Amino acid sequence: MPQFLVAIQHPENYDPSLEGEAMIREIGALNQEMEAAGARLFAAGLESAGKAKSLRKQPDGKIAVTDGPYLETKEHIGGFWILKCADMDEALAWARKAVVACRVPVEVRAFLRVRPNKKPGSDAV
Image 1 (spheres, rainbow, N blue to C red):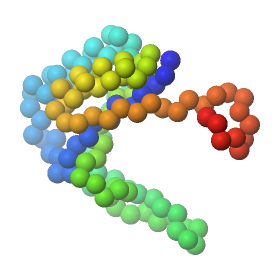
Image 2: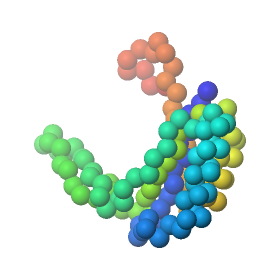
Image 3: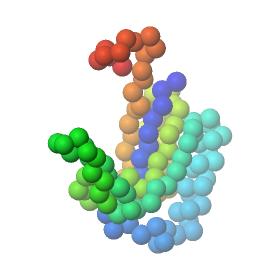
Image 4: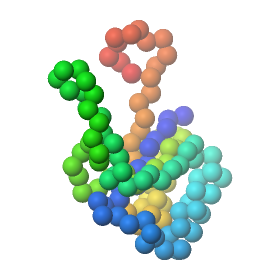
């Protein structure tokens, strides 16, 4: 069965300490509903993007490690679910509930499925 990432998008200045009890209860209820349906494989919240580390290969082959996220954006992933769903429509149904519970935008992306017995160097996944 296909797997999907449902990523919670927090604004750059998001303060998790401002989350109210109602939001926490709604997210907990959504987690329970996902588990009961057998859809939830994994879920987690992330520290703020300001605490991230980014790594980039330099022209000399060395790896540079810098503070903060790789992309300069106004929104960052604040948490996510990895779901097992029949198709994108089912994943979107869960994401709609996530938008309501989390009160922020959500992005849904399917994981690439690697076909077994592919030869190294093949561009097909």
